[in-house]
Image 1 (cartoon, rainbow, N blue to C red):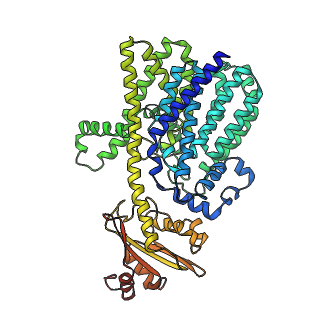
Image 2: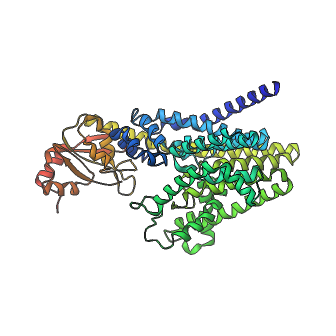
Length: 560
């Protein structure tokens, strides 16, 4: 009883520590705002309601199409709360704490060492490489998916201890629920049966394979169906999907996937420990020193962040593998846990084999699950160094680890500070639009420009089409047709245009000449145009409707 109480007390203290660290690390998150895809998710949620989940057949929904539980979560966090991000980020922080705690429990269970588990938990909760999964509303479906991934893994570990089939069933249920949030856990259909060979020491013999297949028959049956369905979506897509390798007509897709099967896990092994900005800064210096002929070229930055950065992280990964190899050689009893972490990390990158990279790193949200096995490796490496040096040097090791984790925290907070600046301007911009244009008519065309260019030639402070954002911003007025929002009209960055449906019409333009073309062709009457100019210095919107209508009516100064 005393030992049990001590374990409960220790876990309570660890949970409290991880919760405090998470809150300190992400305290600025509540001052941010929608960044990009949230607007589209919001638009579809408020127009389709529960239909966003139920519009497919039950079988397709079971197989994970439409991420039904994420859809339900967004139905509440976006559909109900709309333009308030606080509830979404409360959920994000809560799951971040839960996942860090489950990571601690997982590592403690397999290592039987609280120090290793503590280092792993702290690494997970402060990791900056994957913070986008927490700080981006559109990515928070990854967090509960990861919770159930960890639950599934722990269920199998408990099965190995107690040999009770209920834990296998819990593992299956947890895996399916995870996929209903997001498909990042597809690798579990390989990892969980594979754990029999790592932890149960089932041999790669006919008898051993039969034993594993028999224990996981139902699990593998569901896995084959769900994986085949997802694979079919990639091989036979209805059209190009942004960010993914387009399979149709590509004769080298098999070679590409095989190459990425090796490259993606190998590069990620080192990337999970080092923030992208650090690697890219090092790559930039290396590129300028080694490839001086590229210095005058504008592509030197691209070369540095792709080819050179890949060289650096591959080298770094081999260094990490070398350290782990020494650790396993010296401590044979740790071999199975480190092997598990490496297999876990390798498999966790497989769902992204069809995903193209813009640089050496993926977007941060794709690393979130992989941070778990990286945390296991981090805990083992730090503890191993600490236990093999004199106490005085051990204190130095802990200090270095503390500075390293603090650096990750600072990277997260720096990124949040940038997002807060964007958020303040975006919220001010929309508030100004509502101030100068509080009500909507049946037919409304916005002409909005500013004295500043934000992204390329874009004159508004958003990462998606302002026209679509205004549709969702004013949707509750009842003047915006549902079909406009559900069909993503004006969603693309820089998109301009006008559409009508019955007595309703809506349009957005930032270029007067394009608007003038619609007026000249008789598609738009100048009387429904409302013109505004945003001043990025004073953060105010000026009404220039009368002058814009006059120019449109006479085409003065528009067509030359």
